[in-house]
Amino acid sequence: MAVSPSIIDRLGRGTIRQALKGETAERRANAVQKIGRDIRDASLSEPDLAFATTLMDRICKDVSDLVRRALAVTLRSSPHLPPHLARQLIADIDSIAVPILSSSPVLTDADLRSVLKSKAAEKVRAIAQRKTLSLHISHAIVSFGDSAATARLAANDGALISPETAELIGTLHSDNDLIREAVLSREDFPPQVIAKLIDQSAAKVDANLKTYPGMSDQRAGLVSRDMAERARSYVIGESWPQDRLRDYARSLDRAGKLTPRLVLRAAGRGDMRFVLTAMSLLAQQTLEKTSVLVLAGNGIGAKAAAIRARFDVGQVALFTACVDVWLAVERENTALSRAQFQRKIAERLISLELDLTDEMESDLLDLLDSNAGLRLVA
Image 1 (cartoon, one colour):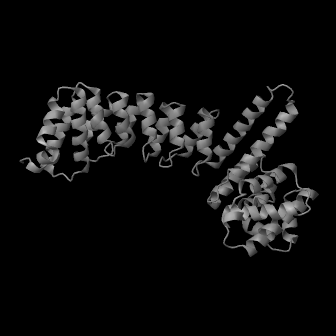
Image 2 (cartoon, helix red, strand yellow):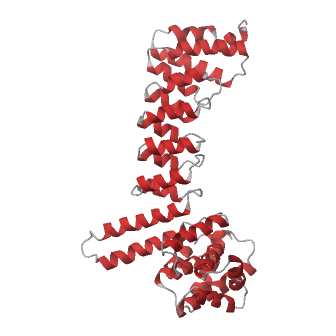
């Protein structure tokens, strides 16, 4: 099949000549950039693509890494880059391989896996940034990559992460703050791994606090416990489906961390979905029955559920007050954002003469402070 003159005219005879025979690497690289952009943006026929492939193959053999990098950068996201040339580029030095590894749609999982097995740090990190990653590749990144690669993977919403990979991340990188933060911001991590990471963070805080002069072990324990309890409440996502809420509550319950204190903190923040889920576990009754009791609106059901969940007298009174306030705000304000809704609840609870726990009062004041500007736009 003959080459269409249009491809040569589009790329430019002078540009092609400069890309292949330019006197300096800089001139060849500049010409390659132009050719790469034209190939990337063009609609190519089979003869045109064959000509472009031959041209790219010649460019890939250039002795200058500057020239090869110019091709890799311009064609990193192009479907017109032939797979055999993509494999050649990812086997090159990091500055040339990284653009292709991070973006090229022509690479297969087999291509990526061969690079991951090499354990080349920069290349593994580049793969971790790809727009989408399969379960197997994500697991390989954690297995063969360093903490930086795992952090990028955890922050990549397009990466599929299996429960087994999530467990591996929690085991290998529990002491890495960057990875822990990325993991806790995801909504596809197993709840038990999230609970485990929070516990590990609290243990680290506890150990660090005990090294400070004048800090008693008891005080360090109280601070780390409060931090962990706060994290367990705040990590719950607004869009978590019910089965995820249930699994998270169950993981806390199994670890002995699903306490009345935690439920009250969630109730004070207006997170009623988690409150009902937690109460059903603590009271050992169905979610449906718990919901009917707690949300009955007369206070008697909420009190009964709290007693069955083994709240003490003060906690029962505080729980019923939180439920009453939540129901009142829910009836009165149907168009509030989540932040505005939480602020309304916090305002009501603070204004009541309640025997708030220190940690709950701190949470409510934080809600008021963090949402201080909402009143201006409400």
